[in-house]
Image (cartoon, rainbow, N blue to C red; front, side, top):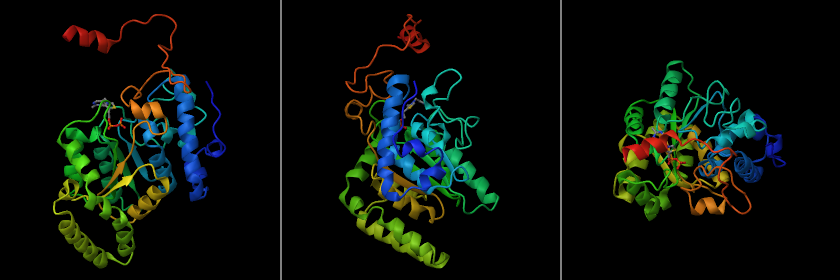
Amino acid sequence: MQVQAGDLLGKINYPSDLKKLDEEQLEQVCQELRQYIIDVVSVNGGHFAASLGVVELTVALQFILNTPYDQLVWDVGHQAYGHKILTGRREAFHTNRIYGGLSGFPKRSESEYDTFGVGHSSTSISVALGMAVASQYKGETDRQHVAVIGDGAMTAGIAFEALNHAGIENSNLLVILNDNNMSIDPNVGALKDYLTNITTSKPYNRFRDDIAGVLAKISSIGPDAYNMALKIEKSIKGTLLKRSNFFEALKFRYFGPIDGHDVKHLVKVLRDLRDIPGPKLLHCITTKGKGYALAEKDQTKWHAPGLFDKITGEIKKTKQEKPQPPKYQDVFGHSII
Ligand SMILES: Cc1ncc(C[n+]2csc(CCOP(=O)(O)OP(=O)(O)O)c2C)c(N)n1
């Protein structure tokens, strides 16, 4: 079912249209993008809460990056609906996950803005790193490579393997950790505890992202000034925080945590980070289901709710009228149990 987009969103066919807008208008774009996702998914089905959580990130990234030349990789891809809508697929979005329509995940054959075919989680850092190293070999020093990965996907071995590799490459890689404290169910494990500690730590919250702006300015003076600034930053962080940062230990520059729903601030930080070379990690705190109260409250239920009444929140039983055969995963699960 086709749905009407808001005034600003209705005129954005590609990121070049978004870039023509004033920074002050980005909040309205976010509102309209969020509403469009709610309107379309409620009547067509698909993943829901994860895309609502990255609306501001999606808009800020497309506003700052020069995609598709700059390469943006969404992990899993169930959070890439906003990305699809802003990159030439708004009108086709109602065909999402329908036979012959758009894929529910980024797909290279579908758009030049989809840099990698995803669906399985935790591959984005390796992928973006490969692209970054290739660009480095080709001398494309101005090219940006960004992986957006959730805190759930970050717990996988393949993501750790990629961090381990990226730290010793000096290629232009930005990892954005989309930390909503959720996987499909609440996230678990030591990394989750670690991220919660960082997020609630007062010194970290005071120190935060202002550093990015200062470093970006200094790096424009030259490499000597930049190296000196790095040393000073390290010693201040060491004294102030009295502990090491996991990502910095792996030779990433860590920035954050920042509010992943403040689009203006995201734009500022992403602009600064563009000028800082090497592997960087930006820790963004977001809310899965942001902007749809029921989804914020019960994030597991609203990960992929199926069809629903967007006003009352009532979830409809099934899209098909005819009874369906049981799903493979259910038969398998019951048999094993
Ligand atoms: C290798 C692999 N394991 C499991 C899944 C199933 N899966 C899909 S989304 C998801 C949760 C991902 O959580 P997170 O990365 O934090 O993203 P969020 O949904 O919170 O935005 C999982 C486990 C998958 N797609 N691939």
